[in-house]
Image 1 (cartoon, rainbow over the protein chains, first blue to last red):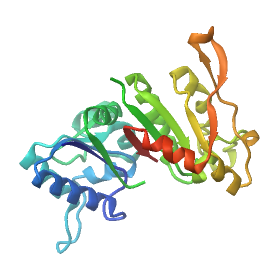
Image 2 (cartoon, rainbow over the protein chains, first blue to last red; image 1 turned 45 degrees about the vertical axis):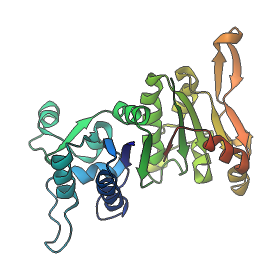
Image 3 (tube, chains in turn yellow, orange; image 1 turned 120 degrees about the vertical axis):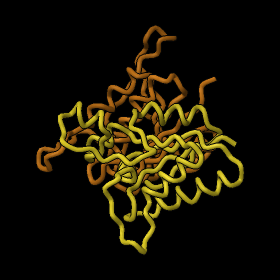
Length: 130
Length: 133
């Protein structure tokens, strides 16, 4: 089955981010295809590479980066939600005249159309949080 | 073939950002020519109340945007009757949202339809994609 995942809540504050990751991992293990993972609302904060969780805790962003590498996942961060919350990649930082960027490896920034497309192209769009 | 997209709006307009960011998805999504419906339930019904004034909270009043939805061919707006009643609201407390029907010489029609909780469950059952905010 072709699945897409929408994540609406930030890391650690809310279980949605963890549940989404566990779901993605389980779906892939069962042989399902994940068309796209879309990060929206505070969910965009899952994509920051500047988070430093305690060593004995999971690193949610790193988990996504690793899963992306292993399965060539399309991890998309909503640009409108990201701009509000200070998440940006190198290109976006340049465009906005900012002196830093913070998007972790494996994520890309794009528009809300990617969420709609995920809904159109997938058998199921599964939402976590909100 | 177009899919049926349902945007469920469940939260009050300014306490959290869900309502505003839901509206942003709806507006972008309108360009994809899908079969779009919106539903307002629970505190989400407050999003459609008329006469919103955000001067005191320093936030942008985005409620006028709802009246533009008809121009985006978003004209199926379901408001749950029980949610309104539980909050002491009636249809008169909401904005009068309309759309122009191209097939009937651009006749102006109401976009908002009051539905019961049970009716909304049936409508949801009929959707392909449900986005909840």
